[in-house]
Structure formats: C-alpha cells, structure tokens
Image: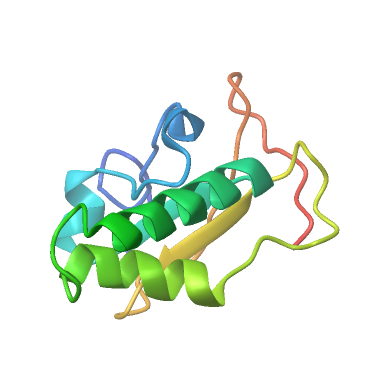
Length: 118
C-alpha cells in the first residue's frame, strides 16, 4: 500500500482556487466522486447572496425549484462565514456525501501550508 500522491490520484492540487470565489470548483476528479468544493470570503458570500436574491425576485437563472438555484439557496441560507472572520480569511464549503476527503491544505504559491484557524 502506497501513500497518496498527485501521481496516483490520491492528492488533488487545484491551483488559483481563489480566482473563482463563491462558485463551485470545476474539476473532473471532484465531479467524478460527487464532491463539491467552494471558497468564500465575507464579501463574496454577501455578493452571491444578493445575486441569488435578485435572481429569485426576477425569476432569472431558471424557474423556482431549479436544482442549481435550490442548492445555492440551501447553502447560503444555512452557512455564514464566521462573524469574527477577518477581511483576509476564507470559509470553505465541502459537500462530500461519500466522505472521501480526508484532509485539505491551503498552500501559498511556493507550496508552503498557510496558517488555518479550524
């Protein structure tokens, strides 16, 4: 039995993940295993919540009951970034029904782990 590595598919590296805040990460490996991953800042959370409220008001983005809209509604209706979160912190949303994700690590551009407050 070997250790997980990027080569054997046991480690997934997603570069520049913060370029798409408040959007589900688009990745074939995550999709294959039914895992949803999203990063949010306080600002991106508030902006996405406003956007969804406006869409619901104008019935834009699909009819009420549209699965994508409903998923976002439930996510943004129940999850709030920590009130004490500083302006440079992020909140991570992970939906992993089969509990495949063992560990997550945020790294800087040099591959060094970032400080976390979990």
